[in-house]
Each structure stands twice: as C-alpha cells, then as structure tokens.
Image 1 (cartoon, helix red, strand yellow):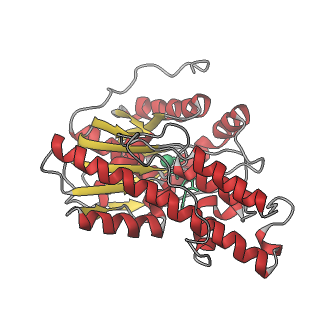
Image 2: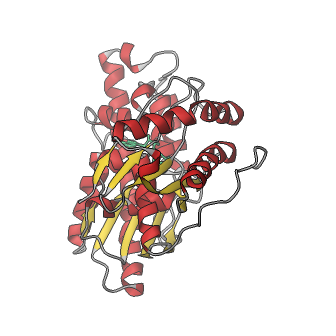
Length: 356
Ligand code: KG4
Ligand code: ZN
C-alpha cells in the first residue's frame, strides 16, 4: 500500500494554483505533494503576478516537499507535472522545473491533465475501483460526468454549459458575506447547517423534457440566489456574517441551505441519467466516483450516496484532502500513466526561457 506524504504549504502571495507531482520510489509507493494553493487577497488571479510568484517559489516548494518526504531528487523514479487546464504562464513554470529535474536525473516524465488527476486519485486509496467506472467531477471550474474506460480513455457524458457548481458556491458565499478565508464552499456548507433548505423555492436547473442530456448549468441558479439576496437587502460586503444580527444570520442561513439543496439536486438529476447512459455503454460499471473540491461537501456525499445505493452502485469519494486540489493526485496520475508506458523520455535540452 502506498505511503503518501503530504505537505501543503501556504505562502502569503496572490497565486492561485500550482500543481505538480513528483513521483518518488514508485515500487516503495511514496508520492510527494508539492502543491501550493494560494488565494489572492484581490479576490482573483492576476496572471502575470501569479506566474512571477510561481517562478519565485518553485525551487523552495520542491525542495521543501522533498525534504518533508525524506527523499532526494536522485531517489525519484519519475516526474509528473500538470500541463493544464490553467494559466499557461503558471503551468509553464512547473513544466520547466519538471523538465530540469527529469533531465538532471534522466527520469521519465508524465504530463498530467488536472481533471484526469481528480478522476484517478480515488484508485490510490480505494484499490477495488476498477475500470470502467462513472465519475462526477465537481470543482471551481469544472462540472463533468465521465465514463472512465481506462487511463486516458474517457467518454464525456455531460459538462456544464456555463458555470461549475464550485463557482456557484463561491459566488453565493461572497454575496452572503461569509469568511472567504475558509473557502467559499466550506463556509457556505457550514452556514447551511443552521438554515431551512425549504425556506426559499429556487428552481432546479435544466429539468423537464427539453433537457435530454447530462449537462449542467449553474448560472441561472447563481442569478436566482443573487436576486433573493438583493430582495432581502443583504449586503455581504457592507455587513459580513460575523457582524450580522441573529435575524439576518437566520435569513442568510436559509438562503445558503436552500441554494445547497437545489445545487445538489441538480447533480443528483444529471447523475441519475448519466448512470442510465453509462450502463448502456458499459454494463459492468459498479462504481460512481465523485471527486473535485465540492466532493468534500457532506450534503453532496450523502445525497449522492443515497442515489448510488438506490441505483445499486457503490459511491466512492477520495478523502476530502484528496478531493480538493493537491499534488498527490498529480503524482498518482503519473504512476497510472507510467505503468502503461504512457510517458516521455527524459529531455536532452533545458527548456528555453521564453517558451510559453
Ligand atoms: O478541485 P478544487 O480544489 O479546485 C479546482 O480545480 O477548481 O475545487 C475548488 C472548489 C471551490 O469552488 C470550493 O469552494 C469548492 O471546491 N469546495 C466546496 C467545499 N470544499 C471546496 N464546495 C462546497 N462544499 C465544500 N465543503
Ligand atoms: Zn481541481
């Protein structure tokens, strides 16, 4: 069984995402996390600043991760690095570093798609999850329903036509004046526990006979929530939750709970249809895997768990720390590709500085 050493470092700078995995001693099964996920104090990411920060910290992040894991660069068996999607200037910093390590130690390299890493990491922990399986990926930028047939082979059953669910959680949390340092999703989940999920009747997106697909849409729900908040004269910027009156807090909790109920209902609706489709394509599927940041949400887990058991499937979610962005998932995706021979030989040349 694999030993996973995790070290998530938070540096006080406006960088949002750096994901690279260094795969160490694969036979011994040690993966090193070198991800830093840093939220900007400006509520967004400035690409140029973010890439400068990546450049500034990459050597230290890698050195710290190796040290914490008790391995040296020369112990590594391969290097896995995120190649997208994301800000190309930032991704390039990771790729360049990975290439340099690979070149120095003559190591194979694996370029990893961020969402594939979210989809595969469950197999690091739950060895019984075999292909084919159905996977729902729910994060800040993506809402995907896939039939995973093998490493590198995915049938897309559905995606979002506008926003992802995590984006809707974050936007709602901001409008409600929640503490964004906790992360919008976790803060909203916490407040929703105090609320009545039936207090406000938001409509469930893309229901009815017109929508014969497994796609998602969260822009309309986001808008409904914004209007409900404005109609109740709540201004989260002016009055953060921490200073709201008890009555105001209750209204916000009701909005949070009502939003969450409908947001998760939408996942449930589309998963139900996706399971029907997937079973026609691959009758042997037995698992519904749910991953990505939003998969750490308890309501998501329990509602989809109930759906899975109704449909005679097992719901499998990575532990929360592996649902949200992390470097272990990238390293593990590297292992999965490496085993099948899907890797690059070590490069002969340094990465030129000006390549994007
Ligand atoms: O996968 P992830 O860490 O990063 C992306 O690839 O986007 O997902 C981040 C998203 C954010 O929108 C965050 O608010 C959401 O996942 N999230 C949650 C929870 N934890 C993280 N949403 C709802 N409930 C949570 N407990
Ligand atoms: Zn992610």
